[in-house]
Structure formats: structure tokens, C-alpha cells
Length: 62
Image (cartoon, rainbow, N blue to C red; front, side):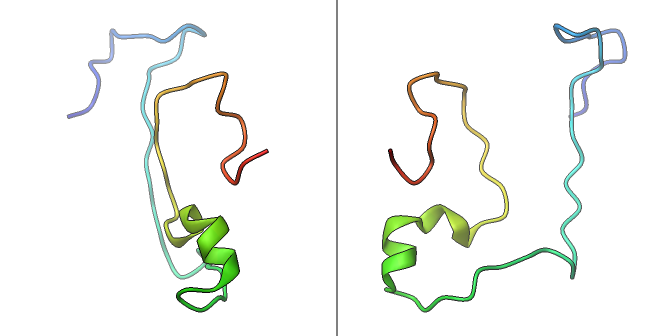
């Protein structure tokens, strides 16, 4: 459900987002089981949302 209009985040804006995937979404060209997908499997999906953790800065590792 959408946030109520009275709710504001730390910078004074209404929180929320709108995801609109379409034909212009870039996808990686790689084969299942390739070294690229073994190391960076997160690229199979267009959006990942996780809680912020300052210790986790690099999705593919250090």
C-alpha cells in the first residue's frame, strides 16, 4: 500500500518509488552457469531491495 501523504522521510519527501520495467531494460548476455553469473548472480534481476548495511558496499564482493 502507498504511504500516507502526511508521512515524510529524512529529507522531507514522501517515501516511495514506482518500478516500470519495459523493453528498454538492459539485460546481461551470459549463459546459465557462466563464470559471470557464478560471481554476480544478482544481475539476473533488475531490482534488489535490501536494508542498508555499511559493511556491505559491493554486490559482487571486494
